[in-house]
Amino acid sequence: MPSAPGLPGWAHSLGFASDGSGFALLASCVSDPAVPESGFCRQHVAVRDAGAKEWVLRRSPLPRIQVMEGVSAGLLALGPGGALVEEGGVEPNARTWFTRDGGRSWRAVDRRTVGRTPEIPAGAVLTTDCAVPAGALPDDCERKRLVVISPQDGRRRALVRQPLLGAQPRPQEQPEPDGSWWVSGTDPLSGRAAVAVSRDGGRGWTVSRLPSPVAGPGWYTSVAVGRDAVYAAEMGELVGGEPVKNPMRALHRSVDGGRTWQRMWTTGPAEQPRTLLGVPVPGPGGRVEIGGELSGYGSTDGGRTFARLDDGTYYVRRTQLGLLREASRCQYALTVDGVRWSEFRLACEDPVGG
Image 1 (cartoon, rainbow, N blue to C red):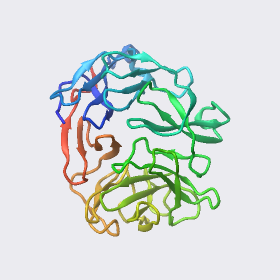
Image 2 (tube, rainbow, N blue to C red):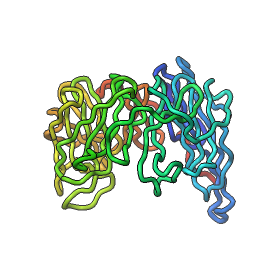
Image 3 (tube, rainbow, N blue to C red):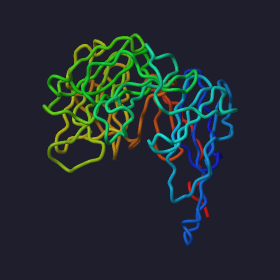
Image 4 (cartoon, rainbow, N blue to C red):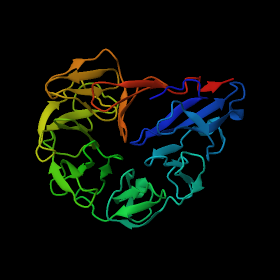
């Protein structure tokens, strides 16, 4: 992956397609400490075409904003050359734009869910909206449903078959390397943490309950599929010890594709890791890494024991090209095997200048 440290401002919302093409939103801000209300940010889109040796700036549909408003727009990569850019906020009137030609042109699309789809196509993103009451904002939603964002037109469509989970399912936006789609939630009978997996593009789902250390539901579960195991990190409040951000209360492992699970790690008052940023990083032969708030931790026995890593903290998420690691500002890396990382840099200028 080529670097582009000289791009203006700072980068966020990186996304990649399976062919190596990619998008990133940039924000370049100017502010005067004496007159903070006069500061503004220009928003850009950086694009890497498939096979290209460099990133280029292309026209952004996002408007210039005041520094005081904060940068809150987001981008979703939708297959080769495709992306969706959304203004910040969840209000129905927030604007959304779609491209299929690598950001050379953009057209406005409706953010509302319209119609249904029987499957999740290649390049799509899996998300949710409010099913009951229909159209309610997140804080007022009683039950969510899975929604597919199409790589063909950027529109949202409800998935016909929904997994049998509790009222607030949380899907992972991208499929795992084996093509499986995962959704975390709760077992509707017991209320305990559970996950659902589909191996046929969302046409059918299998739910399995996790051997959680507590009876109550957690926040959500982060799943990552490796070469020889699936890891499920159960997130939620910890009992005892100092409170932490992004608490991980247990790490589960499956060697049969998620049919059965073994709890490998139970977080205590002091034992590390106690936090997780993003998803676990599975590797071969029982290797798994956890990026935490203060440091990273690695295991070579499937998560039974961990040792502190030297490379500090990082956030990891799944893209269509592999796992993306975001470390300090403008420092990124991609991996497909959890061992070898391709490092690159984007937009390393100061985020706010005078």
